[in-house]
Length: 414
Ligand SMILES: [Fe+2]
Ligand SMILES: [Fe+2]
Image 1 (cartoon, rainbow, N blue to C red):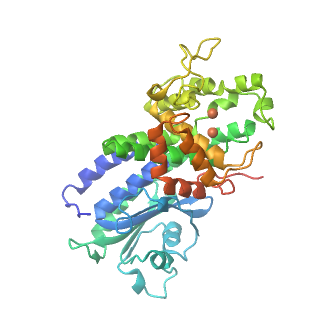
Image 2: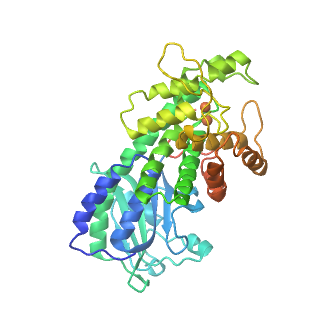
Image 3: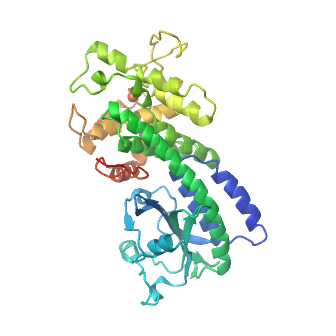
């Protein structure tokens, strides 16, 4: 990364902030915040911890030396730190003050915190200079901590961060904190909506929604990279698809409990009612006042269509009509791309998850099913993108396990 010139730093900051505020999804935002902070300070690596449920939750990671892109399984590692001053990030979260450390291996031993070198030992990386900033909103709420690691000189050697780096990145972090808080709120509202749905349908859990959202965002990213889609467009669509994919089954809220909670297979007439969750879901976003609403409606309506035309609800003239009759199935690219991606993400997750009527399938067997359904149930190009990022898919499963507390979802009481 090349250090930016002083004169245009603040001008640049303003336009960066404007762009950040366009992002709705938390992960997309953290990626952008970290990238911009590193560019402002010419830093090689960085990570972000978010304050969640009284802990510091490791939430994002970049490292140009170890991996060239942020799209690595490492961003899906789950790791938490206690919110106390024994760790560097914990200290900054507790005090709300930034820290500038020239060499983490030469810190005085008298300090309250120590550097945890386990990551360096495991990866072979050498952390040296650190700039650690609280993500503090204007109401002095600490939403997280950003660690910017190893400022580089022109020869790529690690050098200390400067007071100026601290001032500029600190100003940026304070502004970014508001955007992070807003994105956390958005995700919380979504997870709350899904929890309402979960009261009816035990399959639609917050973790299932988080997994489907993350799978869909990553599959889309790969699909778009393969086709040379420009980066700004990839980022924008990925931001929307993550949220819209999480809401794919929201229409189930209108399906009777007797059907959703029935153990065992559904009768023909019950299944016919169940299929209407696609229509009900699409109706929830009827205003279509934003790109996000449009994508939510597309995914809700089309995530049970099949590439070969054998899915439902098919072509329908008016989803708001008093009585809606299902039409002939949409086929191939008649089905919006986002829905084709969510179909695969949702089915994969159902295959490898335990449900009330079935056991989970081992990963290898699920992959056989998916490969076999390419060109039948699934778009073959979406299947290819899925296999290209299989390592990421497995990491996402690990992060959002059924027994793990859902990040940003503070479950209250039993
Ligand atoms: Fe569904
Ligand atoms: Fe689902």
